[in-house]
Length: 132
Image (tube, rainbow, N blue to C red; front, top):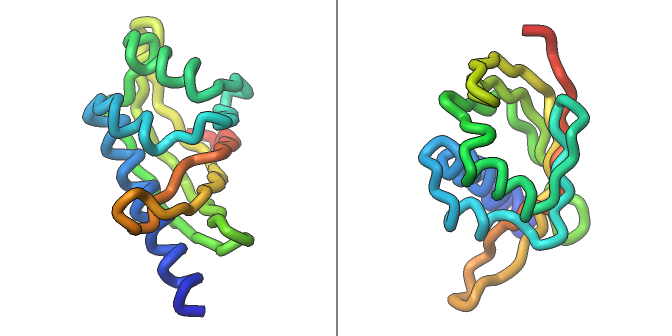
């Protein structure tokens, strides 16, 4: 029970770190949060791997101008955590500003780092559009 609570906190903290890294364009921080085997399905039905997602963000093809996660709920699943919530964003894509709202589900793998602290890595993301 205590370990599950710790895992939920780590996953929610990882979500916030991911949000900040995307907004601040901190690509090394974002890369460290993404698992090599990441499957990232956008609310537009586009699918990315870790490499293609980072490429889109680093190249400026997609830029998050505003990003918030609300109504977050976390549930321990085995050695990981599933997080659901509502994402609201202002995204610049191909020179166009778009408002995006989606329900999302992420799956975080939790593991100990070299210092013995538990950290999360994003394994999967699925977004479903919500009318703006």
